[in-house]
Length: 145
Image: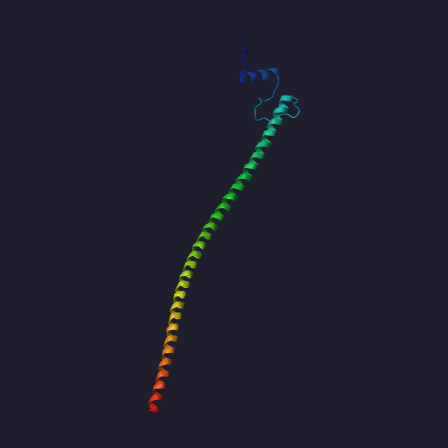
């Protein structure tokens, strides 16, 4: 069986004109006639509608996920900035703690020096009191002579 070639579009148009039908040539972009009752066409239209709905849903999901991603990126950027600020504050706190420890160490040293000076002053005061007592005793001895 040999396949018969389909007529060329110009031949089909000529045969339509010859048969007396003035219907324009149909294309894929034509809107289907709702009164057409062919089940294949209705199935294709339903499948096309389903595909369009699925594409719209996918586009909505893509937009939602894109917005969510952008929001997450902003949140991560904000968190990174906060982390850097916290690290800076932590470094400043450690520097302040070190300075405070150094001051405490210096004050403790000063306190020890003051305590030693106070003890030396007390010892010298006792020595002066002892010398006064001896002088007083010597003067008393001298007067008695």
